[in-house]
Length: 232
Length: 185
Image 1 (cartoon, rainbow over the protein chains, first blue to last red):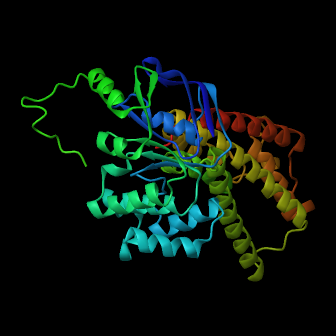
Image 2 (image 1 turned 45 degrees about the vertical axis):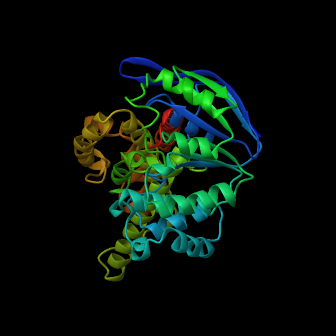
């Protein structure tokens, strides 16, 4: 169970204080998957970084009795000058995992071939995403924080990610950020809309999405709903 | 005596290059600095030791009279360098000016650090001035370990040790300040 209470984050900018959000409260239990919608800059990634422990809140508390992953984003939490293999070795070591077993898994899953022995900075964003995802699957966290992992990569990679996350690890807690509404709809069982420093929570995706569309001022194109906007 | 000069060079901007690693909760800002300092200390110590052994082996130099004193002087200098490096490293994350100013400053400090002169050979008024510089005390102490009674070393451990302690305190506060505000990226 993760308990977020009165969470507030303020960034110091050159123009004074910028309030990202305040008074955020929610609980997340094992098996719950919270999907968060919000505009660019609404604070979705900031929220995930706070929950991961990478950053500290300005006010409020995050209590947790389960292990939480780092934010799984396509850029990955890597040292870019090191090779893929060195990053696997590094992460295996800081999380106290077996390197050889992890290497075998990543080689099989990421399908990077000889590029695993090249520096990460030479990778394309798709390759980086594959490596990032494979590495984050080698550590069995109880809660996964997923920040737009679906934005890059090909269909085959998506299918494999979805299988690893939502079938093999369906019992875990997750917080998923995505601009792909269908992805959030299909894979979450709770939803939240982050807007103007407030998080509104929903149990029904359609209600959440309708509110979200209104907030961002989305207008249906002419002919809607006959024209389907491509969704996953 | 590149020890204290290269350490800040290592730490300035160290955080920027490793921001992505800050996503992992078990990596802290201080860890990155400590890791860099260990590399720098190891490298400088190996080069100092191997040059000393080489020169002693070909008899250009005599073995130090008091090895422990040499080691202690070396550690004092490393301590100063490490604390200075952490402070400047953390400060460089807050302002790029630190990086730009440190390079010329380090060149200016280099001849004054104590490596290039013997304090006892200076006129008294110059002695008073250079003894304000902490590295001078460390190097003089190390020199005494090497040459013992054959050269008169002037130093005050009662100056460099408190100086290092205060510098370490400032460095730790600076690292703490930065680690509270760091945004991984």
